[in-house]
Length: 185
Image (tube, rainbow, N blue to C red; front, side, top):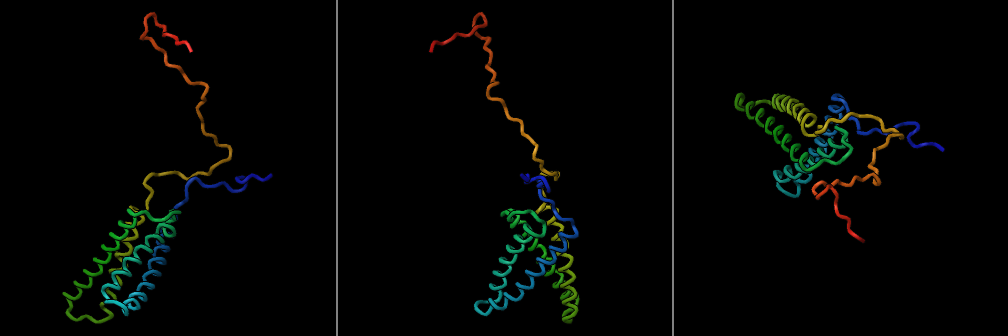
């Protein structure tokens, strides 16, 4: 009979991917969802105002990205919790504000910049904001609150259990002569 843990022991906790692997996963999932979102906004805008379409797709893509980051990017092995969704949405909002401010400052310094200049500023700000967002998600949002060491489970581990027959009776010294009364059954 082959034992289930004989060849490859199960891990007590799942290992989090390293920073480079996580960053690559972050870029792929975030970039992929970003490209899909950029295609979905104009399609949805054919049925409603563009501002509403953009807002709906932004909310949906942020929810989707947070789920993908929890399950794939940071390998939590579970769905994202509501607190993580809110924190991720906060970091996405901060990234949006950073790119908006960068374009605003560009237009203050150059009243009519060329398309290439605008794209360069926007993409540079997006890269910086995305890198900062990755750091926030990795270090604060999807980090393990309780540090655990990863160790293999073994088949021979036992958990001590109390012996029910070894229950101590409390001694009563408050009775006269140190004896307690016995009740007849």
